[in-house]
Length: 173
Image 1: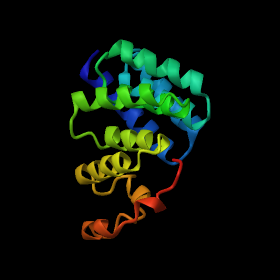
Image 2: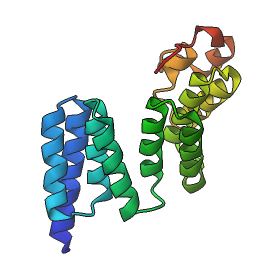
Image 3: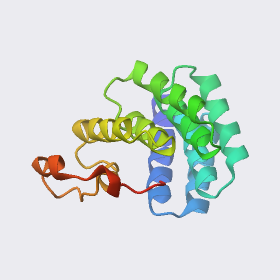
Image 4: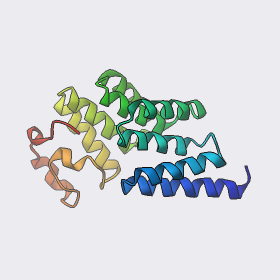
């Protein structure tokens, strides 16, 4: 594909990600599908579709899109994380744990992988491991989603982490 096609694909993927954040699922899906028209093997568009399906509660369709993305790139950090998310939802904690670890082999500083790992540990009621994983996610990305699990808002300072009571953590994501 030429450079312009690549930029157009990237633009559609980015717009889809923005629409997904805005919870405009149908618009997000159209953007990811436009990207796939330009490049049927766009890993990021496939994972975007997987995230839309997941947000819509269509877990089987999400799993299919993730598997297709992993066919395109068998060592995709975000593919492993997305697959782990689905396995966590399905109560397959061991498999979700494995996918988080796979993502960390690719990127040892992946806040998303540590966030997934923390939620797996939380589901297994392994609170110390969960807290450790959430703290790692925050250490790599201070504005990350893990703050609520530690009972803090992101604008509060890291020095206050030592005062956090782990028993106040929410029991589900």
